[in-house]
Length: 383
Image (cartoon, rainbow, N blue to C red; front, side, top):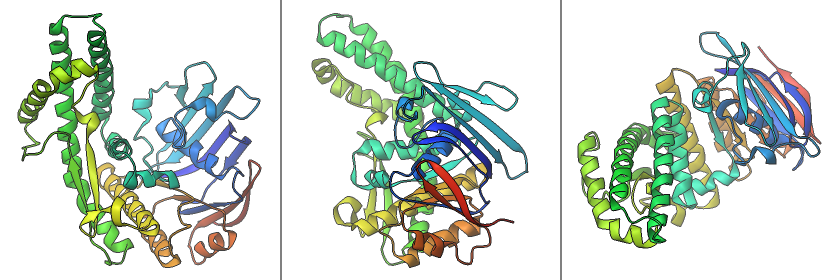
């Protein structure tokens, strides 16, 4: 899978930009604030329907404008082209259309162009709150399973209604407990499906991560991942949804009085987490800044390999200013691994010398200089 053309208008400081990237390495170099990240955001919009920097589309619109537009053309492993157009106007619903004018929902677009993204803010996957780690696994699974997306959306809506009911009970607006039991049954049903699928994902994904870090870290440190579904402290057969439902029902009975007292749901997969282990300890407690970046790169390389195996397509890779704390040897190792996979890679950097060093000897690459929202292709070696 690779992007053959990207066109976007009125995103951040870009008035209108078009690029025809190479099939392997694409480097965007320029000072901070020049508009490098905006290019990767446009790709993210064309694949996930939203930016990886902000959840608010209005934040992306160029100052003085009221809308933005993204058009992404891709070609898959069977040489079949696909073109998607994203229209957003402030105050209106976002439109997603194909080149044949077919209207798509976000759920239908996600996974069509598999993308793996890594930016500095994603260090929170290692050191931040559990929500960052849940978001990572949900994004990966969603790119290979529309059923999972459907259940995530359904679960989110049920959780919202259940929390509203609990809050109304707290305020004595509603006193009928049978409604709580009805919403809880639906909550437990969707929760069991999500937990089971997440466990299956971790069983499959963990070996990719362990292998990835051993290759990027050159077998210098031991790493691991441990999935921690909330409240599942004893061994569980996660392939048996009935067993999961029974444990969730016990949690409901345990937390019911406290939930009514606090007016909020206190159990379920929205509280899941996973541990990143480094040298037999939590990575957040013992890893240096450079080691955290290496762990993140390993997670993302594992994501690339996992998506490649499960979708029979090589995902597109976006690296936003993440090489500043990695030594050159590890950077070159990462790019070599990506090149061997045939992954089309987009990299933003402020260091022009490092940028040009990275494309030395590359069989296919493009180097772009970005300034004030304008893109200039300076060096290109395309096959």
